[in-house]
Length: 143
Image (cartoon, rainbow, N blue to C red; front, side):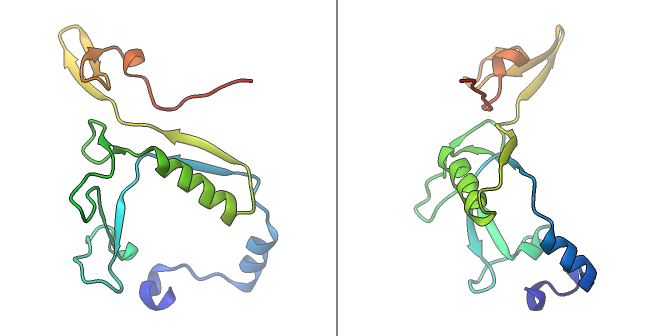
């Protein structure tokens, strides 16, 4: 990793390393909005995005077969991919030894159109509504 990212990686002192290793996480806060396909740019030829170049990947919503990864949400960069959230949660659960995970943000952007009567949000059905009608894909349940 140091060979690839070089000076973009932080340097830690021995004292800082010991502190990080001794400190157990209380919980993980997780924000997840969409899932995309990634192409490795270290071992595969591709043009790296100058903004996200350190990632050494190119992201795409379209697979090799030309099919979108999920249903468009109305935001140009977000797609509804339900299995993506599950995979992210399961990865963190396994990687961080079942540390509690709080999903702090998820969902989609709401399109806001300013009208003579004030702001109007476009619902997932594409029809105008109130912010409450547009809602969020985040849900809670009590048992």
